[in-house]
Length: 198
Image 1 (cartoon, rainbow, N blue to C red):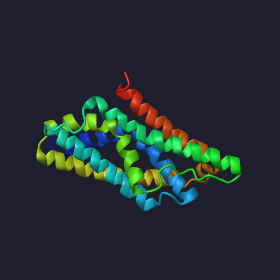
Image 2: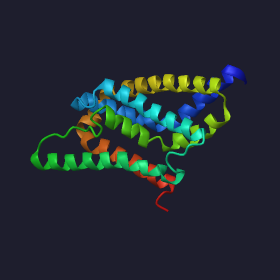
Image 3: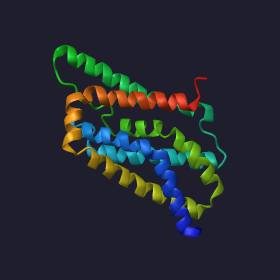
Image 4: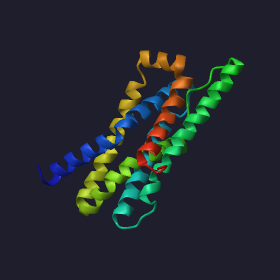
């Protein structure tokens, strides 16, 4: 497969492969929006687009030979979702002690959603950079367009998954613990897989 079809196929596989974990994050974010009102759905969409745009920009700049962040330190971005998870767990513990319900939200606005997306995208940079280094301007623009369509599909899927009654019931019952734990696990995984602490 060559030409435009080949570029679209490669970009689709690259986006899906590097963002499969984002489906979980987006579902959790949309569930948080439904359960506690934060972040708002538009903030999730905008934050996801902003985060992916930052990842693509860093990858393109790195592909042009400008190293913004040394590869060994990219994994430190994992501390962002981990910190959000810890904050969520602390909030849940405090709410439990007072008998109030805690919102499961750990990302409460556009900037924190973008931060989680960027932190969760350390693998994206390592995959996108060599690709952008080897393809021309036309295929790079097609690839970026495919990524934009992929973000829309991912957000729609996360919203759809987050609208099922059974999933909502689980999150309402255990969300104050599940959501922060997921973010903590994602952050730990990013840091550990990067090898930055070794």
